[in-house]
Image (cartoon, rainbow, N blue to C red; front, side):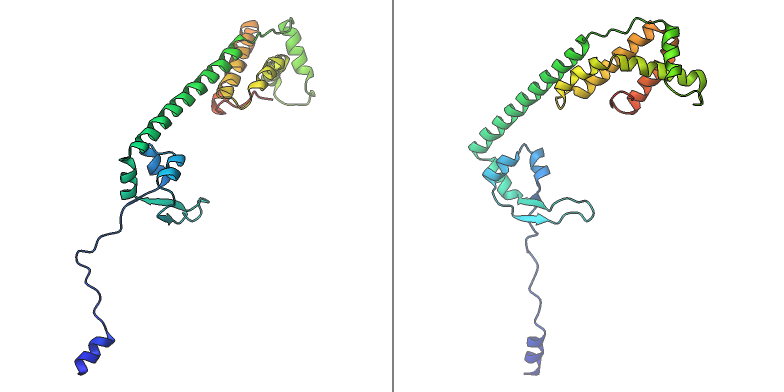
Amino acid sequence: MFIALEQAAHPTPPHQEGANPPEETLDITQLRDRGWTRQMVTRFLGVADARRPATPGAGGRPAELYRISRVRNAERMVAFSEARRTAVERSALARRSQQDRRESVLRFATAIELVLPDQSFDTVMRRARDAHAPENVGGDLDDGRRAVQLLLASLEDSTNRLDVFQGQPGIRDARCLLLDRKLSLISSRYPALSDWCERVKSKQVRDDGKAEPQ
């Protein structure tokens, strides 16, 4: 009797042998790697089976998780195969369209006419020296930098012509290409400024294609 009461007070834990482990799940990133799109997830899987908490400090949202058995069942459906093929075709079409637009912007940047004002090197350097107060330190080196800046400013209208493509694929590369063309023109017209033109090009690379120096 005493033994029976003791066993009732401390019941034996359920037998765990043979219990199935939790089923593997996939998040949206893993599904994309398998060819899924967000629309396909909504259509074929619907509501998520679980959610993984967001990583602390990462600022993200909880990840939606889908049981791999449901994923595999959906992937065996004819409708899923058709949807994935359509998604692949649309993606390829979008990439081609983006590439075409990028090439169009680059062709435009290549075709822009660049005309430097007809002025002698001495005139350019005199304007560069007059651009800042005499007490500024730097001597001839600063004069060379300012001379390149003034010549680039004289070609600013050509840069503004690219504004119509703002937000288009290739616009950053187009601006870099146009800047390179301007510097090559300045260097060929005024060989004494070649070193400064090369410095501007180097800064362009370091800045990863940012706009022209002001």
